[in-house]
Length: 176
Image 1: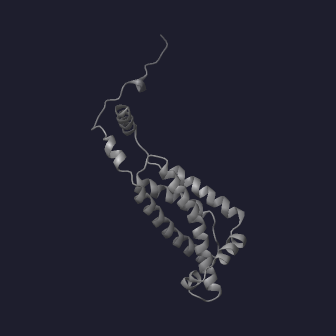
Image 2: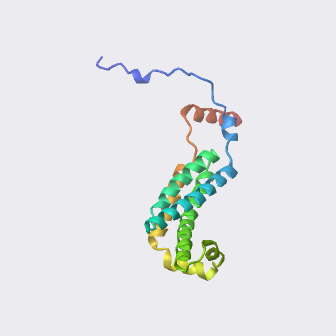
Image 3: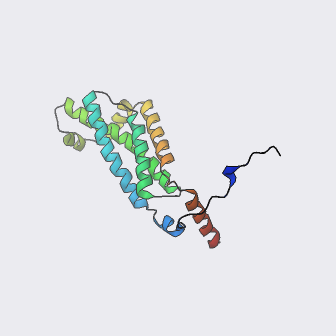
């Protein structure tokens, strides 16, 4: 008697073609996800190094920004729906955060000793890497790398609309 009419509860008309669940599942590609993530890590590492050298600051929060971009790249390139794609994005972003710091260290060392970055890279040894992680990388860098991996894994899975989710559920029920 005192209820208002609920206009939002009316059934929406089903417009447009029904999504093809087999096509959605076939579009997943682990290889493209890895390739897209690696490209972003390399390009963003170069951008991070360039900005750090121009400003004279390392800017560790760039690793979280890298994680966001890596997660979106894995999402767009891989178009994945299962657990593999967040794991790929997290590993790439986590290792990319350390690789970015290493690139900055290589370029800065090259400037200090007046050498080319490739000759500094060629001179890396296991002892140098141990010193890099012991002296240069601080606990805050580990925290930022961990956060970059978390952000990347959150953004890595493909987002589906309601109709695509229902099509995949229907396909799964038919397979049983």
